[in-house]
Length: 551
Image (cartoon, rainbow, N blue to C red; front, top):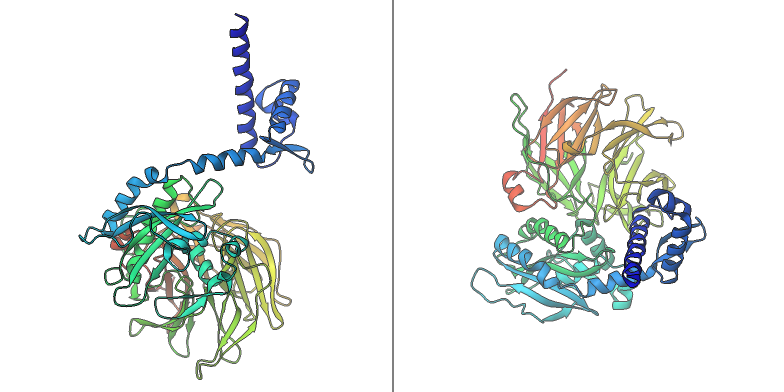
């Protein structure tokens, strides 16, 4: 009887210890013994004894700064051991089958082993030709798509440990251009996947996404591979969303949900809606449209392309001007240069001669960020918004461009996007996409200072996220709704007073222009849209133009 009773008491103490560990794990900050006891309804002496034992075993650790307890490192060691024992092949079995059915090409799963990628499972192509990627094959992490997917989630120090020469190397793109390794990694992290097309008549094309463990560390990669003659670059991009989805589901690690894959279902058509003119552009992530009244042309950036494009509404066509790093279009300088910005800084391009120069670099500390949008204040000054390349909230910033350089005006934002100013120039509006909000603040046109921001408009989960914005001459804000299949116009109180439905799920940005000044130009995206959604919305990635009625 005594041993049975002791056993029951032991189980009770164990359950209390587990309750404490779980409670501490859910707290955003360290907890004191008193807080734990009060919230769990346990006697303080009991909590003190259990916490002391857990601390001794490394399952909890005391934070001297906050005078509270957080999870101990030994828990992470145990979790790492658990992940090491996970059978990824079993977890990925159904996903490999699904990717093979979707693509009809070979689906591959592999893990990192030192500085190599090792294939641990694969499904053969449905075209009847055996895969050139057998189980057990090893290849360097660089430059293949699978290894690059893993590298894109490692920090610079870990990459140097794998190969000290990698950060100074270059990556050959499918069009034959070479770009710096760091820029290739930033593109892969921003997209959430990597693509690679080899050279030669028998070139192999691949697209892959990293599989992350519970701490967000890359432990494997999954993707599709096949002959480049069957897998074009556009097809690789179209397969990427399903591959990302599989990678997330295999370990139940959703990565960053701000990098969305699945848009909300297409709403029912609304009678009487204007029919947009479409200009094919094929942008992965079109942004920052700018109208040139002198040329009757539209200029824009494809951040994920990346590219700077121009479009002729009269001809209904567009073409690429140049291919910089991931960046945004700003506008024009007083001297007529086309101004754009990317990771290297502020660029001026003379449209007549093609001469190009960098006038200013970006502030330090933005290596893990990318530019997301650009606003133009009443004096013609440029303001850039930046965000984490992995869309992590809290790492966004506003950058002010002046004659003397680029400075950080505001930090610790979520995922900032569009900026716009009221007609009198005294109010500035800012989109916080991850928070589904538009903020506003007082603006001093004289010294270009921004006051404290306050909420102006909020958007429900069901209606898409605000992205780019534009102000009309009557002081009404137009908003592009990512995954919302629409653009909306807000009244001065921030309420939706007009909605225009679109044939694409991801409008990204907009501006007013055209001969009358009443044409609403809308950029769109096809990045991370599944193939079935692209089939339903084939105009994704195009430029849309809608002539607004006078009202």
